[in-house]
Image 1: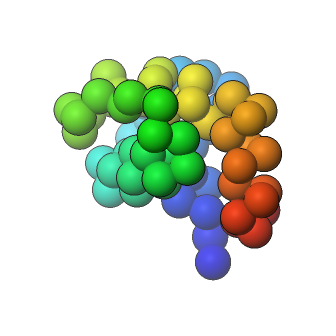
Image 2: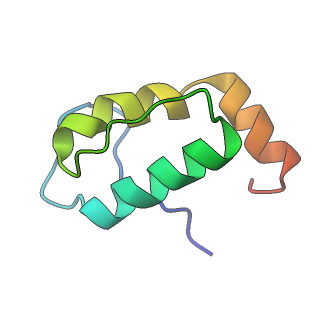
Length: 71
């Protein structure tokens, strides 16, 4: 199964035309399930992306995902 953030380019925080709000909502739910201390804004547009990136780039978050077998 393809990871929901595959469409995101981590080299930039700028949204591209290939981004879908569905992916942002999937990421928000995934982050909330693994790291409830991470608060992601509820807006469904590109302004939420920097917070998503910060949460995903947190190595503790990756460790939690690995423990759940998601990598």
